[in-house]
Amino acid sequence: MNKRLLQGIVAGVVVIVALFMVAFVYLQWYRGNLSVIYLANGDLYVGKLTTFPRLTLHEGYQYQTAPDPKDPSKSISRLVPMSEASWAPVQVNLNKSQIIFYGPLQEKSEIYKAIMDKELASD
Image 1: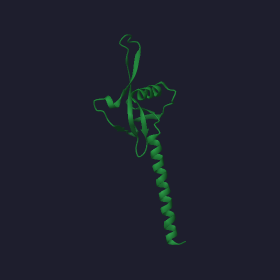
Image 2: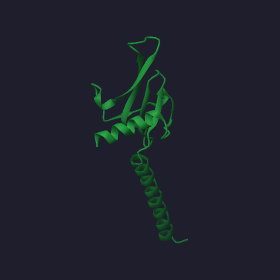
Image 3: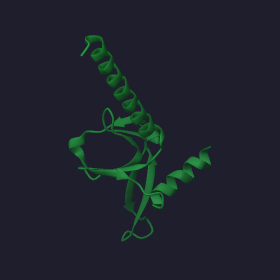
Image 4: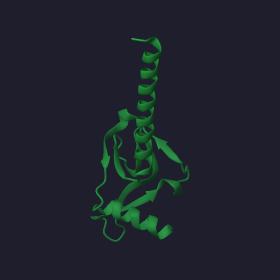
């Protein structure tokens, strides 16, 4: 086989692979799916999760529970935007060894609906 032809084929394959990788990253970043991340310390986060080149949470919320002040036998839950925290990160890079599980939220879940309602209200 001709050396130039082989170089052309290799270059073509590299370009195609690069385009697929760019498309994958683009779709993952912009599709807007919400994921839940449960950490080893018991913290639960919700937000837009990207996995390439590393696990990163964007537009995140921390899910918090606390005793109900009116009835201490019950608890109340709330979503606290990470942007409102005193440290207010733009994004959080996650350590895989500290993650118990992560996965996409269903659109019918209460947390998903609460976040979408909040985003629509802020627009």
